[in-house]
Image 1 (tube, rainbow, N blue to C red):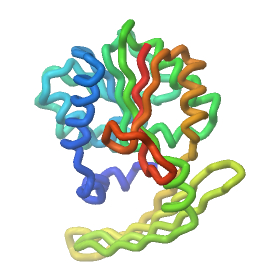
Image 2: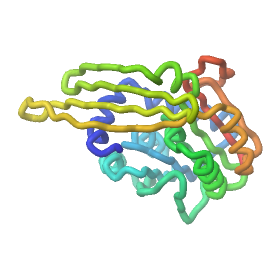
Image 3: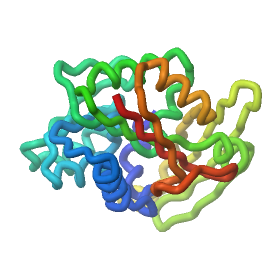
Length: 244
């Protein structure tokens, strides 16, 4: 996962406005009267959000499980003296310091498939937060994974990339499986084929809230997408803010 895909990830994510995501996080800090200095970003990927957090001047540590993704992130972040990049896993990361804020975006939490592992992740986040710290993350909603993505096939033809994205959703396990076949053009104009398999779990807001409470988070808020609006039955992305 995220091997060859890492090197075309940014091209495929061009429609994602990471600056707007960063601005939303700043709005969250303002809304909840937080002025963090030390920030941890989990599952930072190729460092698109990390770039804006680093530019803002936060003392930032960002990690990802994929060395290929981190190699691309390094190229974007190497000039920031206030940013450190490490290879860690969300479930059992261990950093010898605490943070004012911990952030994870772009449905990374959905990649944790076992409820026990998700609880372990939340407990680990709590352990790495200062008192009065804030945890910000989002998920693909159950509605999105089961109704929008699940059991559908998407095909896209871009200038140098063609891909077929086949999806399956299991109602019993709430597991969504994504099978993506890519054809990318090399420098000689020839197409190279490779495949990626990704798996996400759909969690209900009740499940997430219960696990956060079990991890000793006190105040929990959830919003529709990158807003402060209430969630609804057809919310596709749900943002969570949890406080220690």
